[in-house]
Amino acid sequence: METKKVIGITLLILFIGSIIVGLPLLQSLAYGVALAYIARPIAYKAKESIGYTASSALTLIVIIMLFVSLGAYSASILVKESQKISKLENKELEETISTAQHFLDDHPDIKKFSTEAYNSAVSSIAGTSEELAQKIYSSVMAVINLIVTVFLSFVFAFYLLKDGRKLKEPILNSIPAKDKDKLNEALENIDRKAEGMFVGSVYTSSFTAVTTGITLFLLNIPYAVFIAILTGIMQFLPLVASQTVLVPLGIALLLFKNYFAGAIVLLLAAFLFFSVDSFIRPWITSGISKTHPALILVAFIGGILAFGPPGFALGPLIIAAFQGVIETYAKA
Image (cartoon, rainbow, N blue to C red; front, side, top):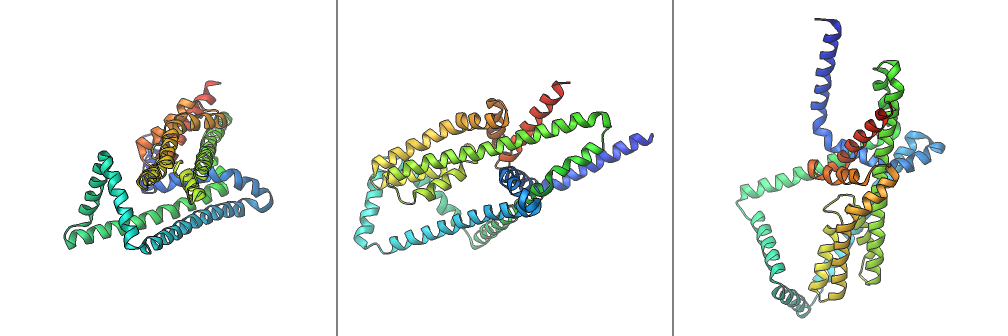
């Protein structure tokens, strides 16, 4: 067998092996890539004065602090509202329960859904001690897995921010000199498009947060800023997005007979559901990344449907690679 064939087969085996080893970390890597692209515009502005390492670390620390602050504020709200409920007198509590019961009686579809959800929750809790222990173990492992995934995502994001551009050097050094310029152009094109897609998502989420915040403020709903920020964060994930926040809020307002505010919040949820992922995100992101709006839809919605939550990063990366390569080599 020729030496070149032996080297080629060896490289192929090593490449497949590296993919197998990296698969368990795919979710963390995907989130890390997305986080790095989102944070990069800020980190790169700071690198001029404090360097790549410090700017990358500082940017990620700020992001972590924001999420920790949001989590702490969420916990404080839950404690505060729980204390209010515990201080309700029996009469007030009975009136609240009665109001909810009358609403459910007037809306049988919602009552049926609520009953099924309650029965499902009870059945998931009920069971033998062995089943309960297994559920607790699964829950603990899920929490540990989440913590590890988040931690590794920030680690990957840090190294990608710090010197991610160096990743292309081994690729360029492994090909003939005559092809380096073209491949380098393709890689740069892919990088610009991927960054544009993720930065566009930041603008889209900001639009959702501002729209939600203004609406809730005008309706005089408590914790309007907090709910708006939470809605904006959820908007990063297409399909589920802000509806996971606004729909329960709208239903809760209806339950407490605030029909006008409840209707407006549900209308806002419907507007965001039908407009943001279908029109606003593609419009904003296509302008930044120079990618066709239809490909933006495929990147984000198709990515989520194909890969689950990691598809938020994998979908745009695949589409950016596809379009970047096609545009570069089509010029040849």
